[in-house]
Length: 477
Image 1 (spheres, one colour):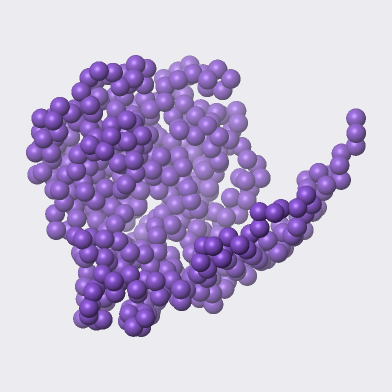
Image 2 (cartoon, one colour):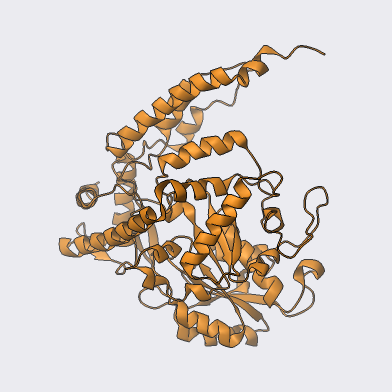
């Protein structure tokens, strides 16, 4: 047999790894200090084509860079979510401990479709999910899985709902010749709900929009009329989706009356709590999700308000047996369901087959920091959102879209006059190019609003004072 090529031997040399890891940790730690102390901009804006030109696709046969140089290039060119003035999308500044666990799990690379491939990550995942289910108030029979994001979680939940509540075995027999199916969801529901419906073959009309009130919350009293209208069109409604912290505004639907409606009609009740399910951890804010314990299924993103790297989403089912409904099939080389509660083989219940060791990262964060740490964090960020809203009101030249429920705040600057929509767009563009803050925008009631998510644990009121001043300066172009 030919000797092992030197480059392969070097790539897996433990001492080489040790040297590189020490250097890389030093680089990343220096970066973390610079980001958290605000010595870096939030983002170094570069136009897309210019950025692409920096990364040649003419890759040579041999090495063309070193790990330290590559790390420096990636660090310098990336958005800096650990800068406390990152107030953009609902993607958090991950706990540094979780990054270290991520290095560990990346090296181990144990899949978690079956227990024999993930003997550590599978039970850690199950224990973390049991803790989450208890926080939500689900009964002991609850169960679930971790999956790759809220979009996959919502799709998986609705697949279960269709299989168990539609009156037909869609998984085995197909859609059949029965009436087309439909889901009720608010006009403010996440786009992944509509995408899930279309992936399931329900079409655009498979999501029946339920009106919202002036605070962008679903109107429970409008549910019967929406269901009746769908049925008059020949559709069979099988599920209702409510939001616990909508993406656009962060507002929480009133879950109790939605649960009452679902129970009265025999419909599946799904809660998209990707952002806001974490409210259960705050004694003062848990009332926002009153009724979530009555959900048949719900999603809760750990990469939002549990400070984990993306993507880690918990999909929980009130009745754990329902978690086996979305994907009922055999793959004899891997999946052989031999019992009704084969929790140790998550691939029976997830879209992913090869799934990274999410359970290690989630369980690890909870164990390393303690659960009270996350309660304090959630409460602080929700309070900061409400304080920012008060600051905007007191400023006099800003308009709130709605009084915030949590740490998502939508507002407009009024001081520039003229076309206010174009003004907000210009402000955001200037802020992005300056790199001082990362804010996003949304459209509500046909008008453009700036939108912030206060998700960085080190963001302070002084940062928000500077944001208000920065918006005013940016309005002048």
